[in-house]
Length: 188
Image (tube, rainbow, N blue to C red; front, side):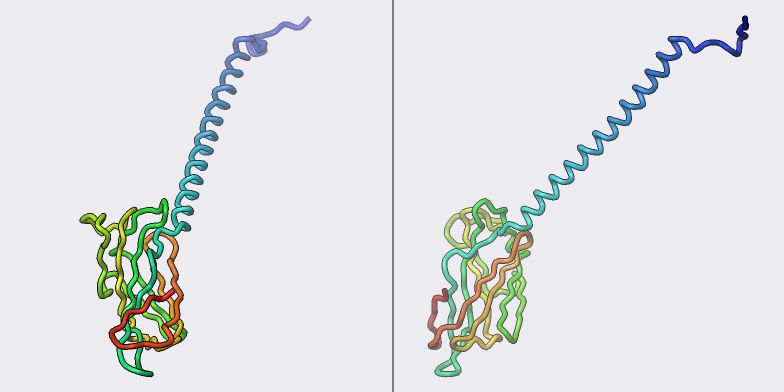
């Protein structure tokens, strides 16, 4: 029969319980870290989706029609001013009109105008307030100088409204067939 010394002690139940508790604590800490990372990732994913929807949604739309004014006479008559009204899209965010840019282009030329370069940008309709945000129920009238683009009869052109957030509003039109100086025309 063999005798056990002090170095050959058996593994007791108490020691087994301590090792088991250590494994459970390590597993709990690991699972807490993994759950935290998962919650963080899902929150970031949700933010990305909301930002993407906000960027993809149109925030402005045309309220009514485009109107154009002509200058010159006969064959040399051309459009000089284009005027239109903007409103927020249904459910759209407010738009800062001071940060909105406008691009007017033909097949040959492109002209980019910032909000400070347009002839006239005013809130109309009676619901406007003192800020520069186009909000639900408000209308913002824009008058653009297009005289440099040589928009004679039948000439196609496009106007793009670039709000600071959201998609671009593009309006493609043709100059009317007959132009007279000082007259305003509706462009559809």
